[in-house]
Image 1 (cartoon, rainbow, N blue to C red):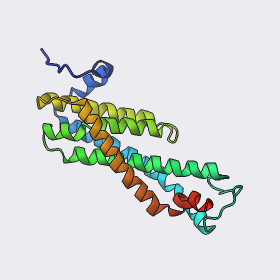
Image 2 (image 1 turned 180 degrees about the vertical axis):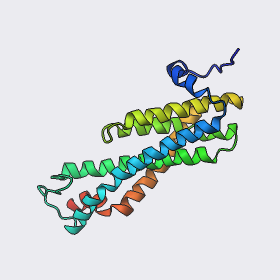
Image 3 (image 1 turned 180 degrees about the horizontal axis):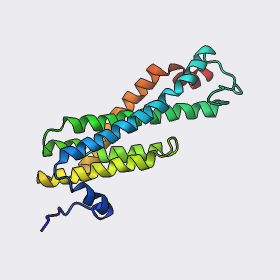
Image 4 (image 1 turned 30 degrees about the vertical axis):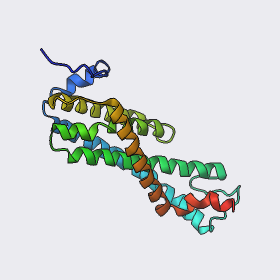
Length: 207
């Protein structure tokens, strides 16, 4: 009889995927699959992120003094509100990219079941946060991120069972918040370095 930990609450929702995944007993092949999915998603987000370069170039060329009705031809950025949305989209995309890369780094560094559990505990909350943030900016992202999240949950559940570990959800949520805050600070710094015109456009207009 299969032993099931009492803390596994999402098992019934993931039953079909779990059955398929459990055909592969070892965790490492499953980890490699999810790492590859994360890599593909980061590549897609990176392409979207680099599209902001056109807006940055045109802002710099105009010495950050665009009038309200100026049109940035390629991206149709015609007013203050749309420039703000571009900056917001850029922050969301780079935050998502860096968060996914952090998840991948933590998972790649894990060498045993206990390390897998410790690496993944906060990442479920992080990935769910990414999914919610990307809905309005990246079409199709919700499905892909949900798939990654489901896979991470299954890996975490199996690793916890195999290591006889106990998952503290309160601690995991706290760690997720700390991890997100850390990544957010790095994302803001990266945006300021790579797109100084876009990040400073609004403050200059109010001085």
